[in-house]
Length: 238
Image (cartoon, rainbow, N blue to C red; front, side, top):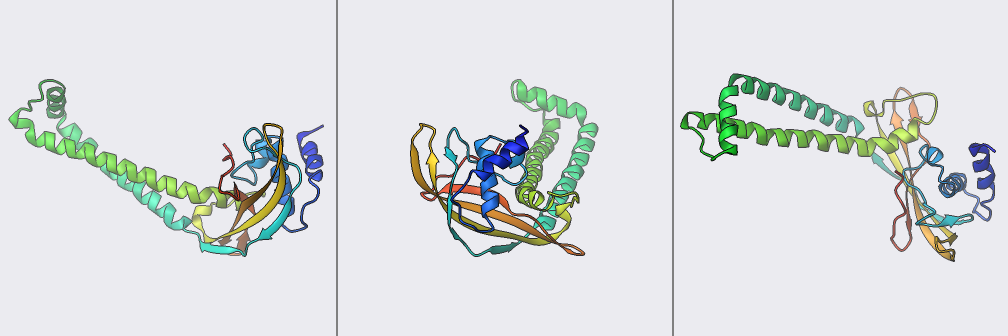
């Protein structure tokens, strides 16, 4: 039996669920999590319900769905900030390399003195100060690039997963748009890793992106989080 067929049959066993638009996605989520089918999960979820730590859900009841919340996407702004940070890094590296080439012998003497007795020759004091400033600024410039990259990636991942599930690929950093979120509350008997079964309540976060292009591009819903109603989060998908 192929994995896709097994997943379809397993999803069909999730009976007793409320008939809502959110039901099929949640069925697929719990089934793929139970089967540890990370390939399937990677297409529509940024988290998982890990059997070894969270347990196994085979049936659930949706008890509430919140109103949709919308917020503007800042991908274009974040992408520009990342490009600006990389450009600043390149310009800084060029200046640093030029200074190093012009003052290489003095820099070597400064480094040797620092590793030795720490006494910098008076003639090299200016070079020491300038080179120390280059090293200090280099750390800050690299940090700016890393921060800009992480901010862009954190917003891109969900949007990319939402809109690029089909044959057409969009560079999401080139568009404005909105990120829509809603929370789905559900109740489920959970077979815990110790073999016992407990009735638990969960809150599932779903999100999708809408890109403003020549025509509006509406992405699919993605499961971005699930937590016990008591506050404990489930396992992030690796």
